[in-house]
Image (cartoon, rainbow, N blue to C red; front, side):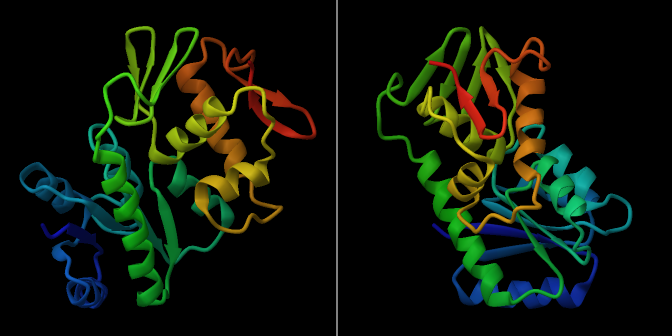
Length: 231
């Protein structure tokens, strides 16, 4: 079965350029010029990955990403002409899985698309029994296979990156991970010292799973070192 990629950008030339490269790799491509059109397509089509521009009329990429993440978990790669660190962090914390700045190398974009698709497909091909791959820590349940997180009976909605960080720490209870360790394990790319992406993600996770984020029960800060799950 062909995977379907939704390309969302208000510039027709960019939509068409990305579409050509994707179709040459065997993907089916759908296109939208803004977030409103993208959400309409998502209601009627099965989409396996979204390439989402940030700066668009009617509904920009940030708002569209947040709305998509309310009930969809397919990978999202954001595109933007903005290169500042805070723009990147904001894009990732709204639920994007990856981020590329314009102008971009189409071949690099395709490589990232393939990587995200492989990961998404692997995650959704569940061959093990229901109880395997489930991490339970007090009231917290992390199902690695279905990507579900619960506190008691309450379902917790995490972005893909947030889930990956939570899974990494929960699987390795008692082990301290530096921000560099976490970044390189989850993002699979080199960490830059000035990047506070991990701090932002940890804060978001705590806000979702901790009763009191200021006094966390699950994810502990080891000052000057990093983060860990208590044994």
